[in-house]
Length: 78
Image (cartoon, rainbow, N blue to C red; front, top):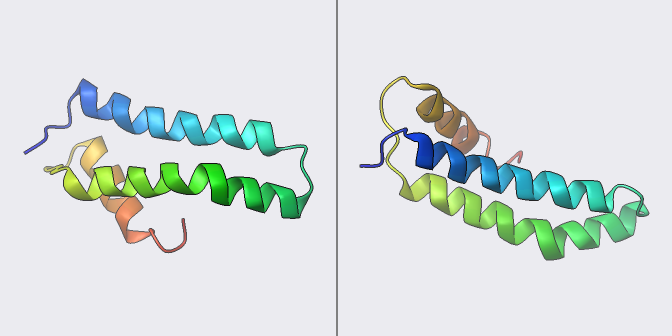
């Protein structure tokens, strides 16, 4: 089981940072182009992020377990 340790937090933050970096790059694009760029570059990161969460065993009531649960419950919307 993966503990909610510093390594796991950093992995999750790195996924989010990567997505935020892409969004900053896409900010000035027209909506259609932005959508295509998200599909090409962001979608694989999001897919990998969800796979990481689904394959990690976060447990307890710590912040990381709570966030992982929240994220999985909103997978469709995200």
